[in-house]
Amino acid sequence: MGEKLGLNEIRDCLKETHFPASRDELVHYAQDAHVSQNIVNAIASIPNREYSSAFDAAKAFVSNKLNPGRFMGHGSTEN
Image (cartoon, rainbow, N blue to C red; front, side, top):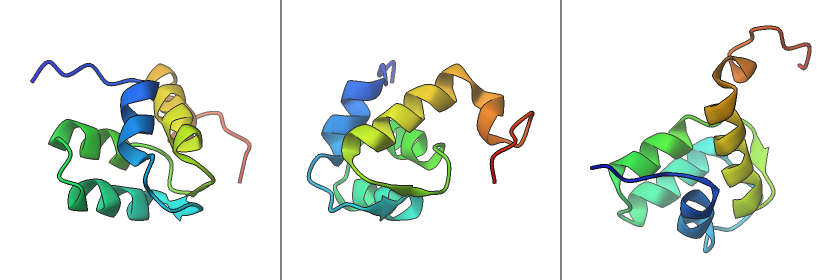
């Protein structure tokens, strides 16, 4: 516990993943790689879309962490 999660931790966990990949594919990859449950949960919290790289997914985690309502349909005009 007490694991600090940020861009580098998520990116490093996903660096061997094949991209593009969806959020669900990234979650499955993390589970198969036996990373900590905290990291699996962090990846599961990112928006459900296709990611082009580990950095792209890590940026989504940081953005979601800083602006949690942004991806929950609050005030977003994006489809």
